[in-house]
Length: 375
Image (cartoon, rainbow, N blue to C red; front, side, top):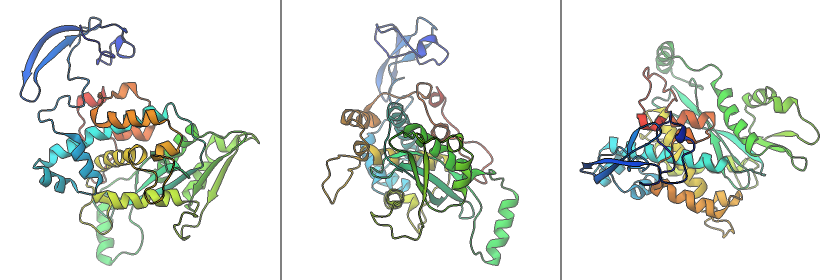
């Protein structure tokens, strides 16, 4: 018998807590071109069979490839097609591997947040992009700490195009909006989700209130005024909303420096968010998965400061997350065991990203998701 942490069957009682001793019984084997001989096992409690590959990141793969070179090229600003050409791999294979890495990153980040409390001020600002068409711009509110630039959570909202349009563009917009239903109140919902995650991780304390730093977006005060935490404030548990003029210089002295910084880093590092580029995301669910992967590497792999020496090795370290956690979880991104969503405590937006539940405007069919990803 070989020891496994739990039974992979979500309906089994041993899925949440299995015996500490070796409990899986060997039950035959099979041969694959990718991995050779693979041993199968059976759970004695629910009689579900599984293999030694079930807990690996390479589970259900027919063509395993090294993930580190793929991740490095993605983080260095190469588009998916450029990575496909450079590695002589299909575009579908590249997308699939990045999707697996993204879910692994979301799961690892949620495990760290489950055991973390923050004491920093919080910045939230919307990262503006578009998916599929410029007639459907998107607002991606990102919550992060003001001084350590540690990203906490993010969400997404699609809305109609604003600003000046030519007569031809107005006609096209009317035609598109007639057949495309957009979520009502999406901007408020997208701001509320990362805000509630930040409130959970950095609740107001008697010695320090919860300080939220945003620009002068009119949606933000409406969302704040609807929260019970806002109405039930006491002298020991206060919430402070600090609004900053968006035209201020984007320097380190700007209170919204953290949001401006992450905006610049995303534009610089991800090919499909470059300014004035023909490379743009076509699918909201896939774009949110890849953005979550990038923000994980920003938190745990990217140096906190490069030009000026710092005692902190990463943004997570600057947020007072133990170095042992950071090194362990960074290793698990490409070399760890596969994470199961049933064992994670995900925020609503993280869960929506994991399940590819973000809707692309104009797309009428839901995105497909493999069965093993929902276990």
